Image 1 (cartoon, rainbow over the protein chains, first blue to last red):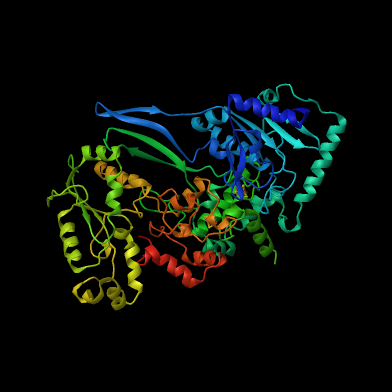
Image 2: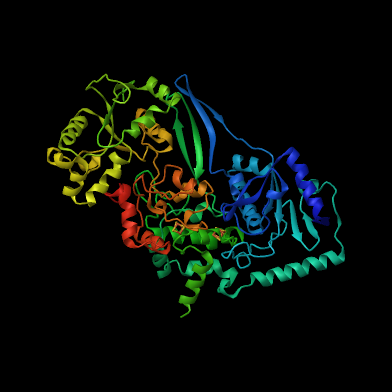
Length: 347
Length: 251
Ligand code: SF4
Ligand code: SF4
């Protein structure tokens, strides 16, 4: 990975150059919150808080996407696969989301490669921005190993005062810079370390501590598959799926065919689905494998902290805090659930 | 179902706005007219015929004559679709059900009140079996969902109607939850069935529940959420009764 130091106007220039050629999407203000959206000027970008309502996964797995069109032909069907992908620059992606994109990249490239996701992903440039203050009161990224993105980006900017410390992990990232900046010096590195140290102190709030050992989260979940916490929280759950929709690592979708009125032409649509929804695990016979809300909450939490953790070696909750905010009944936080189980098992 | 099924539109107590939504579908309507034969449609034609496969019924039931007519329609139709909130859950008409019946009749009809046989408003399925519901006030997504139901029927397929709450689509739209706005608004979305693409919250308003309740609504949780938003249980109940006076869980 290459490290540079770039003057702030240099970054502005790079964004403006990209704007002439490509779609650039970044967090922009939306009422008292923010959301990723296509920008037209550098000024629109929201740096730091507030956290966006929806994570950038929507650019790779759209909320709804036509994946096939079909028409009746000679007693059969003529089908065409649809895969629309455009070049975009995703600017201002927070570390929790960079980590989440890395994880969903693994999922969609495993075994059955998901062409629609991967085509969009390939055409995107990821420019991350370090969070020097928590982007929401709910953020628990420091605890869930989400605050440091490693090299899971094309370019990553940290504000170290008058300049940005820039890490470039790919050719795409280098190209974005267009030769702006100079290689980082020993002094720049020291500045970076001190900025990150200050950052970590800000994030290190007592009330947001993860009580069990991070690496024992899968074990904790396994040992407490049966635990009163699930029923207690489940009872308050709406089954509204808000926690799924806003989660950067929730990637489930449903597929449905739609015929036009002429009964000749139609299309196949895939759209976001969520394991907290009642029909998610319902099969054709009418059997529902996770009929109760507590079953589903236990499943969601286990996906984040156990099943996928075991498989990919890290928590699938990156601590972005979105579900914690979105849940109107305040029951879903994977960190709080883990803490509650941990405390109650040790009494 | 045979080619070009015959379709009849019928209207009971309501504003007939549902039929207008269907009529205003413009080019989609022309496509539909190519696929079905409309034999009864008061809003659009004076032609009437009593032979139809699919009956599409809007409005609630609030008079004796309407009961007999609805039963007659049910007998003739192979499939009956309730169109709109009044037909589905009774809709706004049911607000009368929680008032003093003598007084409201007097207020509307004055000293002629005793000449009118209107009674507590009912959804269609309080009287007959309803096969499908095209929900919403007016029918959701400018009538698109209604069209999807008709197309699914022609294919012999079960229409795809979500049973989860409005929140799902509200999130997909990227809305700031109305409970989380600078000035929070109390919303029925968490217990209302999705399918409108969160029409009202997307314009910054509360969901008023026009699609009826979600599959298994958590009304206890909602009570709590509404209280946190500053509503008393009485106020919450009044809000439900605006369109869902005759609400029935799981419909
Ligand atoms: S589980 Fe919640 S806090 Fe964790 S990544 Fe998903 S939305 Fe963010
Ligand atoms: S945990 Fe919260 S956000 Fe998730 S489905 Fe239940 S009520 Fe909705």
